[in-house]
Length: 322
Image (cartoon, rainbow, N blue to C red; front, side, top):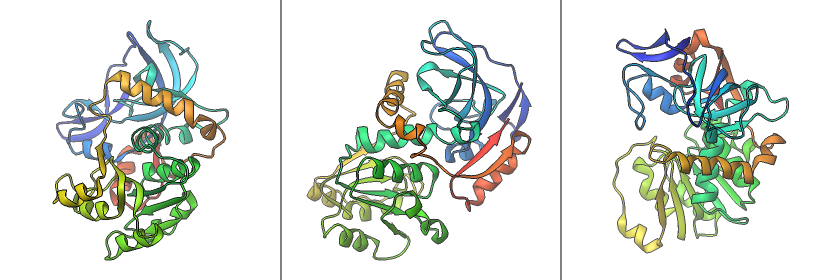
């Protein structure tokens, strides 16, 4: 089968052996894939958790149909239209644990479905399970114009947040954040954004920050968070190392929690998928939670899709179809 593989000369479409499901796995006939920032790094040889290196089939998000089912994969049957996440997604066929698949609602297209699994599971977990978001609270999404960021805005509003603030350093994308639930859009490259957040929250700071940026914004983010607030560190687009004001952190008694799927067990990941199904799935089915598609590329042009992502001018998801 054809797959997008990182090899000695970089990432390229290659022929690899078609996999077969065992145990709790299902085999997916892939129809569409969503691109993510971690994929971009892996096309350059970077590791993502245990994944990476020469011979790696890239990709982590897909939509398609179940073609075969392992003996220990309950609730799945051949022909089901499903979306999910897992390694080796950029291929004609991929394997997934039964607990990492979600049904594609109704007439939703494979392209639309391929935009959702990573964003839904990442941000529902960060906002609700870890961030403990409650109706009436205020939320700041750092890096809100990414696909997962746009989903975070929507989930926060759907769950009853009183004030939703989103940050983006790109003006054209920042100007569109209100379409996805932002009550206030801020530019964190300029001075004074912390004051904007404080003014919007009566001087207290936000109840919850979902931080995809980190890096040099760490101390400003602390200052924008209220006493006894929470910061959930989801991403480090602004850098994985920076100065950190421990005194400010202590004085505000902020819960600062780091999350990643990379160190979670399969049982933990299955539970995250179960929580998405149990809490926000009606909103997915009704298309109240959805992501815009910036552009669709055929699989033969997947290299161009990654070049488009690296140009960093898109809003929403980049999708590849097979």
